[in-house]
Image (cartoon, one colour):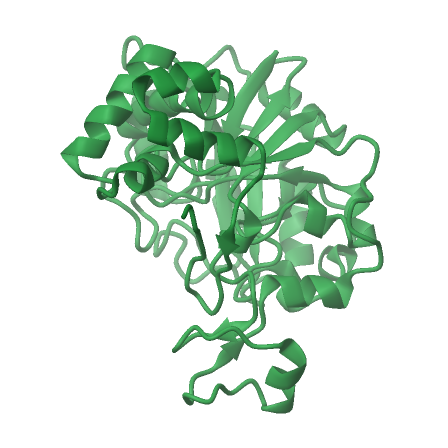
Length: 383
């Protein structure tokens, strides 16, 4: 069985998250997107746990949950991102809601319900030990993010955890081409997830995994991740990520890392220069680009359909014009992911020739990307 899964997002109980992040809305919008399995997010927050219990049923003790709302096919897996005492983020995939309740008491934390992503007063190694005690799947979240990724503080995964973990999540500013230049990462399964704070299809599933499951269960997912049964990773071109290049967080000027260090990471404008993901990868890299472990899946670039429609017609993503065209395409071709990946370009062109040309450029990777830096997203120049 092959599924599309987004294994990292947040509920409305996380900071700066949409109030529409409810189980019902998440499930419905995931269907439009074409996602089969969605993370619950924030499963250590008591109010969210109660809401999940009210709205979801576990499927035959599998650790997979389904909506109580009729005619909704989206399934859920229990997850939580946590922050350790070094401000590094870790993603836990949890066997069940009952286990999430039990784990709440295992962490040193001032107030577990202060935020959906709790600040744990423990090291990454201690968090991993708790995860192991409860049979969780664990790995570092968005590993290259310069504020909260593991490589901001450590030069290796083992240095943080003191043990091998189950996966690494690449984040929006990297892909397999870049990450596989770091030798230790050849040991790990790569996950690509949205880390979404909003339920709308231009946010959830903006990065996702196509996974082959032997059994549709928590144990089946755990086995698939551990044996590397990711069929394909889908995500944003890493150059679009807002920390891809080294740049000023004030004026967003791109800086050469050597010159930036010589200038004490201060820009001419007086702003702070933030080391980019590409610069950090270059520091850690020991392998030439293009070399991958034999089981590494293909990484396909994409952007959400609504964003592509916005570009194609010079209209805002949330305008009625874009949403009407979006709904027509989804109704015609079943879901958004199908439009982006599978539907023949000729059939898309019959409905929207401008959109067809843009989708073709993604499928063929013929993109002119202006890179992100210093907290500002990059963009694709379609001219």
